[in-house]
Image (tube, each protein chain N blue to C red):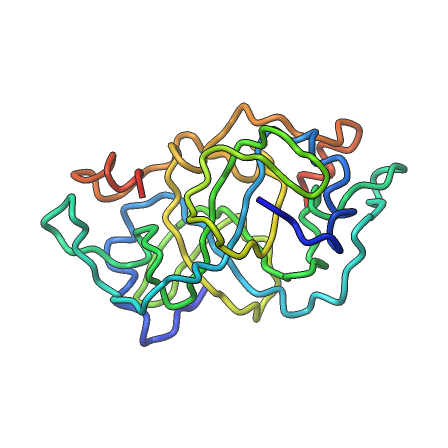
Length: 117
Length: 117
């Protein structure tokens, strides 16, 4: 990901974090339906139980591994976004705030596939 | 949190999730500085290593526990936002995507305080 030059000072010390949260604008989002039947399921689910890019406010979010930083360029892993996606914000990942390994996930039938999205 | 009536169908089955991610507009955010010295530290840090509400794109994010849902009203715990904050998006929390309990946190001196913010 590339950060605008004017914002580069805001990246100071970010190398200390192994993970960051990226929020981006899903610029190719095309409308939305509030109830969706995912391809991996036969049951319809509420849009807000999915990570579909087609949402009323098309914000995308990925928890990514920060592999390297060179100036204003961050190399990350596990980013679920297409090339050219506008980056809106970078937040540090704090396990105490953001890490809930035991969180219960709905949609038991399609759980593993839901998590791919 | 209250969801607009028109979006209520999108909440279908959200009760199956113990945690959700809320993204909101930090409407009282007032400008930003790219390098900040938090009150709990003597060292300046990049803004993007903090969860300060004063950011170029003032988006807030909280991983919250979903305690109850009644229609379009969600009762949540651990929400770091003031009353009246406009909600932009709700995403399901998937531990496999969002849970990194072993993530390394920078700013070792101020770690615990940093995490309060």
